Length: 231
Image 1 (cartoon, rainbow, N blue to C red):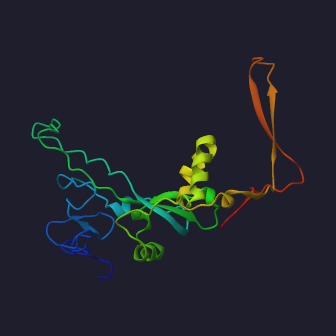
Image 2: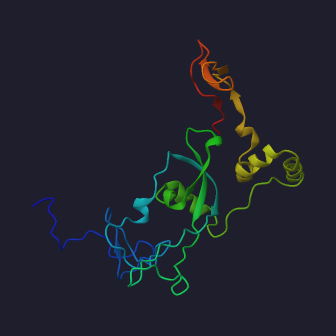
Image 3: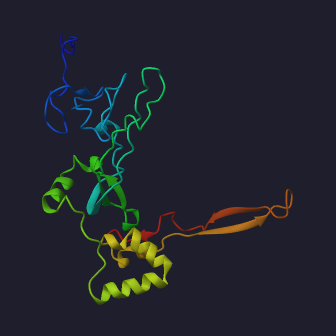
């Protein structure tokens, strides 16, 4: 009968998605993926009971279309999986059986299509893995060592260091944006299309010290966000 599957049927992969070898595999309950428990990150000490979802199914989707990959770096290793209890039901002493540690994974600093450079953010390699942009980036760049930070060259780098020491706001912007190749002029607001009035009004009925904030939109001005540089 069309659409009917016997109990013997199994559409899961017959090899591990990570190492491509066969053997005893842990199958995802929502997709055809299969894994060795030692190939997961972090590795699992044993096959879990009940429903299990693979890393791909647990990975949050991208919040939009990625326009450009600006930088990548190694992230912190994930925390070890919680070990199962011992035969007596009590937690196993970690000194007796140390938990299996995970390994660092790549994180990518990306610019989103249709958004300014102010919205650039970090995403995991797993989130980008299926995109054509990631595969092209992988072919063109060294994926063993992260690229160096972009501090400019010569006199420009020296001026940046002096400015960072004197201007905390510039130092924060450099740490968050500039070192990844984003230029200060790309962050400048071109034109303000809307603004609002914020007034504080003293509430005499409850407490003289209580202040309320009220927002008033100026009539005749369209409620559009500030026009930013979209690169």
